[in-house]
Image 1 (tube, rainbow, N blue to C red):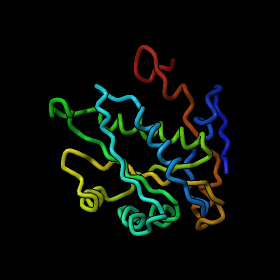
Image 2: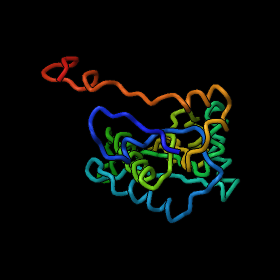
Image 3: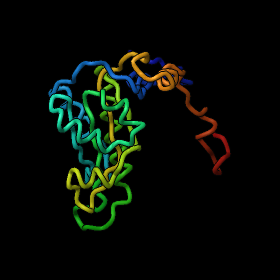
Image 4: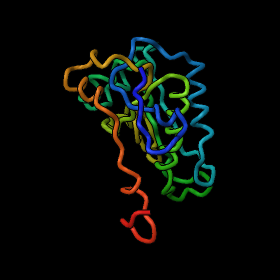
Length: 196
């Protein structure tokens, strides 16, 4: 199910068609496709080529693992995300491997890697929804994540499903038109807030 976007200027379709559904079809994602998505993440740019991203993947093919990752979500996300065939925990390494000093760009680099993954997913007819609503400490304990790594995001991934499969208030949000700030609100010249 595609949710078309009205862009101000022409852009690549895998960017304009990317959106974040809450409804997922009862259809799995094969391991080879998942490997390609992670390959897209692997080739993302990063500060000093540190590649500070790490991922924990859980699929409905292994219900216990899928349930464990779903359990770190806040209840409002868990109620719909549990139906996604794939859940992915994105983790950032907070220090540079080469010298052990703090990597202030680690979260940014993880975000870039996840974006690469989502663009690849969209190009393959998949959809994903990123979530900040999860218990990072519970994720740390569940997956024994070292102190120099930080759980940052959980991604629900699969084939978009019907909005009608969601509770009414979520179905309405699912059907709502996509919106973005106008370029004049985000691009400045000469001084912050002065439109380009």
